[in-house]
Length: 131
Image 1 (cartoon, rainbow, N blue to C red):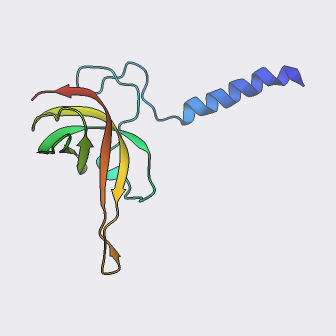
Image 2: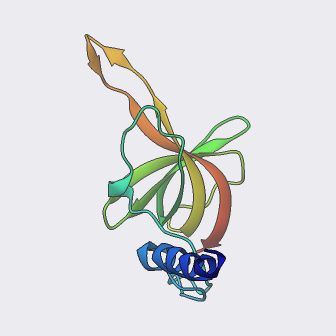
Image 3: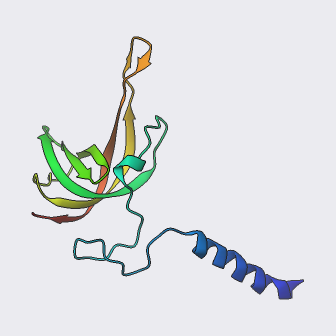
């Protein structure tokens, strides 16, 4: 019975690797560095009110809105745009960014309809490249 354990571990581990969509280590993200996680397209982010997923996003900053102790900036990729709230220094308009962020949803019920807004709360600015 125990002689099957290494075979099961090999099959299970191989299954996890083959089902993974994470790029291989050392894959360039197009910004001059290597990043080994999944980059989520903006169009793939669902407007799920209960979503608390952390996503990795890459795109160009198209506008910014500074607040008193924080701010927000809009990121665009080839699939869409989304606002990112940040407690760090805001990137400049035109900068290319690679960030990790948590999905947030602000509910705004109006006349029985949900008019809420999906946005991201930045957790880390992984890379920022001035354009």
